Each structure stands twice: as structure tokens, then as C-alpha cells.
Image (cartoon, rainbow, N blue to C red; front, side, top):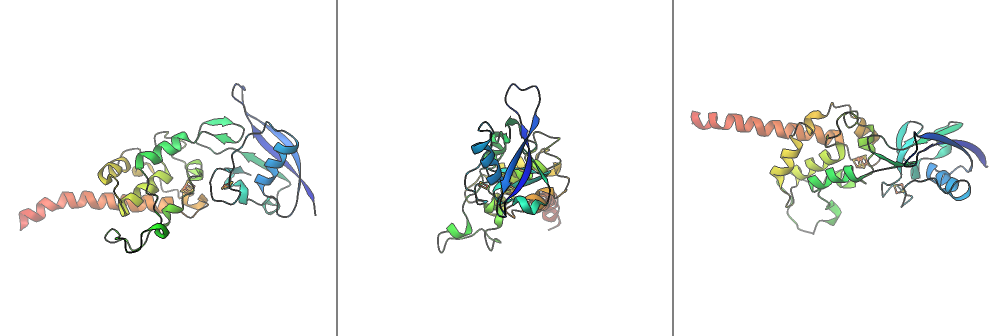
Length: 244
Ligand code: SF4
Ligand code: FES
């Protein structure tokens, strides 16, 4: 059965003095998603509404936004299941605002590129290929859909614009586990930077919000342990040699 839902949508165009919200009424069906509703608004009410989307099935990461105050993928967020008479739609946090629901993702990808993220999935490994010692299987990092949700929810990313961020640090940990030709010392030096793993306050918001089960906070904690282990080994190795 059709049901009319009110959408309050964040609006901002370059040159505006400040953002505001516009209100739209949208006819919804039981399976209508927030992305369906927003594209319907564009199609039938206001073609100037800007948003990103591509796959419509939680795969490309482009439709990440805040819905009723929570970071989600709009394409798999069912409107009825929100259970609210009004749906408030806003852009991600901790990224420069471009227009309406669109934020600038270039800084996010610049951090990823610095890590030179590994892209090979377990399923893509050549049969018989050797894995790094101690790594039994490719972990889920490669499931990252690069949506930016983890950065949006991160309290540190909100206060330190140079913070490497959850997704890039998760990638760094994957490089540590499986360097696969990457410059590991360089990646570890980025992670060991004051704007790297040590800035994380272990809020675990990123892991909670990640729509793809990447567990960025878990990777950050793992990376910290590895870095501390490396320091301890360097500290005690000479003594051990002296004692021999
Ligand atoms: S780690 Fe998760 S939340 Fe962060 S960009 Fe990747 S998929 Fe999105
Ligand atoms: S449109 Fe691709 S993840 Fe939502």
C-alpha cells in the first residue's frame, strides 16, 4: 500500500550563504529505499537535487549519506523500516561539502593512495600462489567499498584533518599482513605517524557503522600491536645479543 513520507533534505549549492533543508512528500511502497525516494524527488519534483549513486545494491559505496542522523548506504536503507514519519537526509561528515548530498571524496582517496592499498581478494589469488608466512587467508579488508562512512562517523577525523582515517589504516594493516610488493616500511611509517594509528581513541564507531564488515577499528588495534611489537624487538634485540 502506498504511504506518503516527508523527506527533509539537506540543500547547499556553491555560493549559498548557508545550507538549508527542503521538504518533499514522497509516495513510498513497502520496498522503497531512501535512494529510490531521492531519485524520485529528482525525477518528479526537483531535478537540481544532487546526490551520488551507481549500483543500487550496496556494492559501489557512492550513495553513503546520513539518514535520520546515522551514516548508511541509501540504496539499502528501507524507508518504512526507519519507522519515522519524517526522514532527514544529510551528507556525510568530515569531508568538504560540494553540493546538497555530495561531498568531496578526493582527500579520502588521497589517503588510500598513500597506502597503495592491496586489491587482490582471496578469490582472485592464483591457484597455488604463496601467501605471506602466518597469513592463512585474505581477511575482509578487500570488502571495503570505499564509501567513506567510517571517516564520517570517526570523532578523530572530525578534529584532525590530517588523520589518516579508519579505511586507510585498515588498508595499512592489510599491507602489513600481506605486503604483496608494497613498500611495507613506508606504509608502516605512515601508520606510525602522529596522524596515524596513535590518534585513534578506540571509539569503534567505524567498525559499528561500516556497511561491509571491514572492521577498521580491529585493524587499527592490530596494527598498533604490531608496531609496538616491532619497537620492543628493536629495543631488546641488542641486549639479547650482548647476553649471548
Ligand atoms: S572501511 Fe567500511 S566504512 Fe570505511 S570506506 Fe571501507 S566499506 Fe566504507
Ligand atoms: S548505489 Fe552503490 S552502494 Fe548504494
